[in-house]
Image (cartoon, rainbow, N blue to C red; front, side):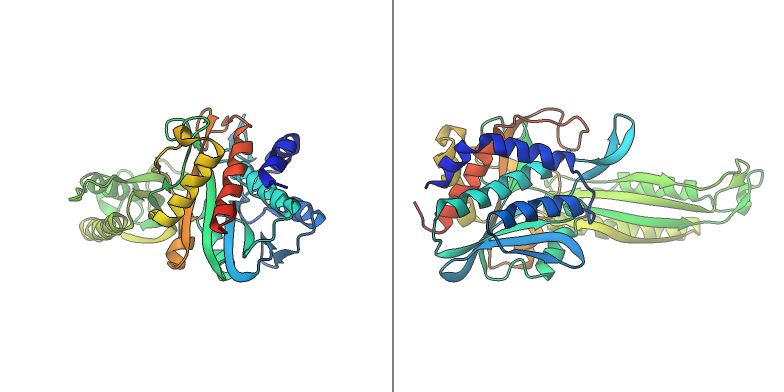
Length: 377
């Protein structure tokens, strides 16, 4: 039976799955119940599910007649954010939707009786929000034999309108620098005897704002956190912890930003006499275009929605660790679907919502992409 017809027949089950996963929200590396829920659903459908002893990612396959693999990836984790005054794990980035679509694509294809010529692999990845989950799955062999890889991400309306989809999301590169400034304490009445960690941080900020790169590629660098644990108001603070957020639409410009920060940190240490220690705490690479993968997903979108509902590309200034898969294994053909879904409030907003029927056509797009990759009709 056509798997897309099965999707139409199981709409209510898909909506129920989404609600279940939304309510299970768990933070990065702690997706125990989410992973168990998906593993149980797959196991009940006859899949052999591969799990891992040191994290909650999992893999399931429909074996094919060749060793080449068509893979679909979903992300398991939720954000930790304040929701109605309570700090908790909460799905406002759409990972619950992504898992729902990939799970039901797997269930529909398995139920359809299709005998694929390539193995179909379903990858449920932990810890996307840390930028380290994809790398962990790669280390654990998720890309072995993979020829094609597809991901999907719900998008706000200003990027991809409702009931439309893009065959590629051009995410930017994102990085976080965590560091500590070590100055020298002194009495506030004698500031000349100390090195004020707050003033050193201010000098860092001033110099970062003066960065000018010779490029038209969008980029930014800014301090987003500054913490000084100094209970006495009459003491010059000695220590400050800081966070720097870096963004760029290309990896090359990101490398320039990092080099500029290194130069600035050195200059500030010389000028202030403070010690500054720091390291890159988070990094995800920018997306690159794979035309073969894009063409496959274009056809999948047209087959599902129509040519009029096809958007050429989705440009996003956010980051996504999906792009590590292509960076680490340049031989694979990979892209991520940008799914218009009538989103309200936007990604990472605690009140983010979207039109649930997007789960239906998003799942169908994934199924079409799989079938086209196998030269199935």
